[in-house]
Image (cartoon, rainbow, N blue to C red; front, top):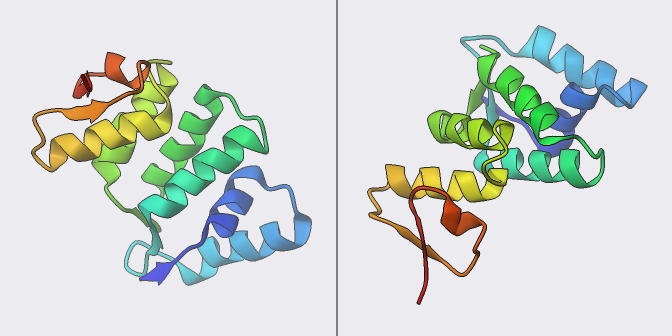
Length: 132
């Protein structure tokens, strides 16, 4: 397995820098496969979502579409894949921010009964409860 940094993942999604895009595409096409996968950590996923939102101004649906492509690529192993999928669906359906939905999904998988928060928006998600 080969770890991938955020900048590689962003190049794969945006295809905006010709030189770096060529290298990123070559990595996927020539160095990675279903048997020698590229590892995409949760930190990389979160940074990628932040970059796509704040720098590239992608919509929630565009970000969810990009994440779906990452999850479906057999050459990539996304950490906590099912939780990332749950969070992308919440983002796609405009129910929550990706980060909040991911926090709820990870806590649920860890066996948490609830996740306490002061964030009123997050508290609308199943699994969150306003701290009082």
